Image (cartoon, rainbow, N blue to C red; front, side):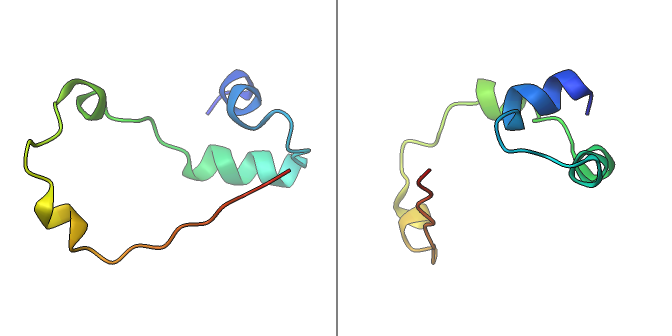
Length: 58
């Protein structure tokens, strides 16, 4: 990840140089297919999966 990409996604989070190094070492691009492939019409299988939500504020 370049500094431009990191700043665009995490610019207001007060990242330290160590945070940026961690992101550069582990960051990966989003596969374009996840934007181009339509979602399946039947999502009943997805509704059976366990899930957890985290709501962040501030």
